Length: 252
Ligand SMILES: [Mg+2]
Image (tube, rainbow, N blue to C red):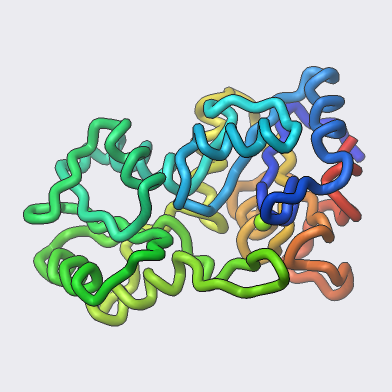
């Protein structure tokens, strides 16, 4: 395998499953760093702040700071700041709220010019109603990500942000104007802007074809599919990753 200057790792299904670290991945990432490679972490999950992800990674044996972590929440906040958003109505959780507030964007449910929808485990009729009312009044509709479900421990499937986006979409009678998370290349491009590394020197490592591998293709960099997450069958893959690995520990 070619050596890269920047490795971008998806989290769930790649470095851990729930609270269980995937064998020898902390050691492999430490070795990449010794070689001088940059490491960044990228998750579509918008429920936590970057600090919370960095704390979880540290607890599992990875060396990371919050500046190494990119989530659909932090990328949404960066996007809204750059778009000069005045105020935002949020259908989402504390992680998303905190990231948006940190960027100085006002959260105002009366006159918001943006409606942001992410995973929201306290979703109510009232929230869907207010969101669709703002969108019908002209607010732009942003989805953090479209993952309809996600795998939880014990093989249980749970509703993901895409299910909340679908509810608001149905009520507002329109699809989102904008998607930030994978497979859109937005977050990978933010990482390149922050690190100065080129697409040719970047490898994106993920466990999902429809988000991670498609994101690498959309962004224009190489990708590695690992078989420790949602995709366990290496046959008939579409889209095709650059590499197929048993686990992220094999990137070294
Ligand atoms: Mg994953």
